[in-house]
Length: 317
Length: 268
Image 1 (cartoon, chains in turn green, blue):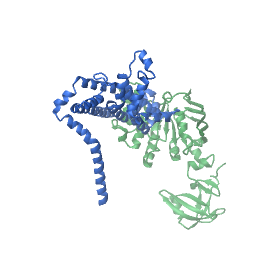
Image 2 (cartoon, rainbow over the protein chains, first blue to last red):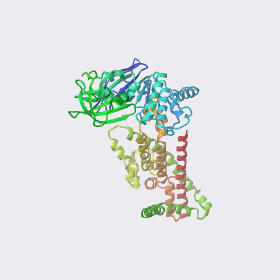
Image 3 (cartoon, chains in turn yellow, purple):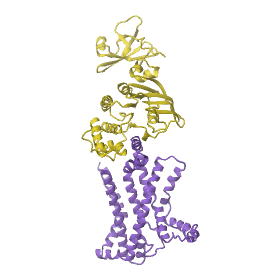
Image 4 (cartoon, rainbow over the protein chains, first blue to last red):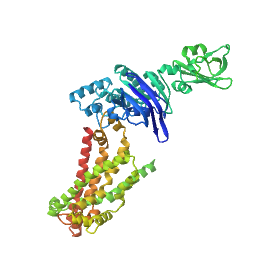
């Protein structure tokens, strides 16, 4: 369990973290989510000991770690750009922390083999990092961090430098790995989908402050404000109110209280169909339909539809 | 296209011709004149007592100055790239000073400091320490002129490598010392090796500053470059060429040694 208490960190005039308090429960994956400049990476680096907070406290497993150097915090850290030791083979990379701890040779070999198997890199032990793909390097970095059996695993945008398809593969892989090896994990990401898929709890940050904390569904269904709503998923604006595009209902017949609108564009995205309509006052609304709904409605550019913005999805301010 | 190609070829000819006339021909000529009268004559002129003493003095000076330059160079490069301290820009500028000042002037300034009538002269004489006209003076002069090379080769490499690997090492439990030996040093080894080669070449090849402070005592404070000059002045051209060739061979040997060192470290 990691507890961050009232941490503030400034870089010159810029306040990166403004009186932040969070908890990362044991065995769970906590995501620090936010746009760039929100302070999420700084917060992770403060937890790791790579940055020293101006004020506040970091408690790791019940011990005050605020003044401890990173070497003594019992953490594993995975960097966005892998930070692979370029002059070492994969085996030596993964073995690094164990060699520092002067473990017996046989134990190191066995542990490294086990970890390389865990991250699916058996047979790559004698390669150098520059002979691996980005995804493989990041899995190596994860094995290297896990080798020292950290009480906390810290991941700083671990998939940020990877291609989209590799990213989604690795995301699924990380989720399975976390089920297999349930070490307390804090993940920094700017990708809300990544946070929704991986995290047990999301901490949404904005300008060095916490916007909302909770399980992914709670943030999605009951956002605290417009920023949270907009950050966690696509939104449309109807009469100045934010709604989810899939909560807007369209009909080809006029109904009581519904509003007339004209279809501007229909985009087919596989299972979902995105319909962009314009209301009589010129407001553009993006609506998301399932394929079945779209087939029933048959919207096409220029046709007239009626839309009902759902009252249930109104944002409680 | 044709014009482009003609341009390309003539540019290449000009560039290669320039290198050949200014660099290759003089060096080749030295080797040609050295072995003109056979390898026996060459061997004879580099095994005279004066030549052997000059060779050992030159090697001794290089063995003292180059390791000092390497250690200082790596430390200074780390301070310049990683450090935040007042006077950093001043240090950065100071390191290039030896490039900016003529070696003869450097030699004279050492004379003014450590010579018998210099600032520290009376104190040194009183305590029986001789710097000018002996080994310490030659070492000081050589360090001065060969200092910048390691810093200037290592600093850009250090900058490019960044400090993320060191941060990773720290999170894995490595102390600063362990992180330096296991992570930082291996990643700058090529820059360091090249800096050492350049520094060595400069150390064994230095003439101006050493010439002022050495006193040129044959068999005692005469380095190889000073021997080359003396032989040249005495119309012993073959002897001068032989000593020059020896200098070139030492430089070449350093280059080969450092490439082997670099690649072996890369494999391990």
